[in-house]
Length: 277
Ligand code: NAP
Image (cartoon, rainbow, N blue to C red; front, side, top):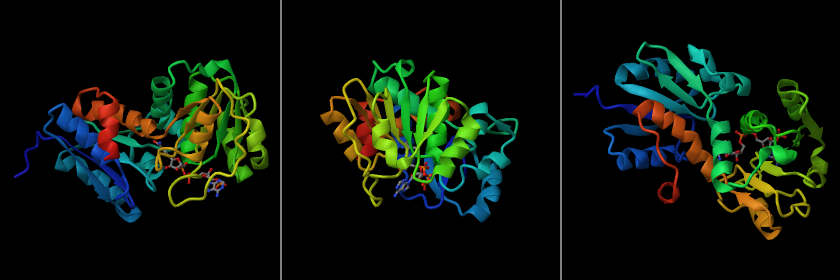
């Protein structure tokens, strides 16, 4: 028999086997001795709405949402946060007691919190940022960089039209740079962020010239498999501050866990080790 008082949560995607979220939330549930469960759920797009409508009736307090459902869930939500609306995608749903579905996007929050924790001297206002890539993750990164006061963002993407679409949504602080100029655009940047899948296991290596990386820059790679990418190695060699992508994954989970299970969890080395195991 189901005990309705045991809160349940899940990550919904298609496929889902690669997700580290079950290890992450599972670690926190054990650490804070919460009688809850967090499971991976492979849900095909045709089934998404049925599953989302059914889960609250089964004792689920919310779900994380990943590829390919992050955009589609916005239409199923009753309440959408401003940042999820701006990004055009949600990664966290809360099934409220009044029956309403609340959708948020915590990727940008996780990105900035990770920089604040891993590069405590980072001052986002001190100079321009260069962002590589214009996919879903780039939208969250742009929203959060503008939110913390980055004065100018140079945006470069292999497919220029996608960068132009982001500029149309995010405004005048975005300047588009041709992909072939990405290496030159690093010169003078205060913050460099890779939001492309280049360098990720199973994807091509980054070929952008990296010799303009310099001391004082904060260089963040959203790729976390592998943890040490070519970009981060080059940043370390240049005397810049490297920030890996795992921290963003860990920090974006904090607001969700707090809303579902009532405790604001810590991101620390023990969590990193548990997720990497
Ligand atoms: P996406 O929407 O599919 O965007 C992929 C991006 O990579 C696009 O800008 C694409 O350029 C670029 N790209 C792909 N192959 C390329 C190539 N051969 N040469 C140049 N550019 C290429 O994916 P996403 O959701 O934004 O995710 C991007 C990366 O961020 C993934 O590695 C993902 O794992 C990572 N990520 C990490 C976190 C975290 O918590 N650390 C969170 C979200 C995402 P085009 O537009 O030209 O195709």
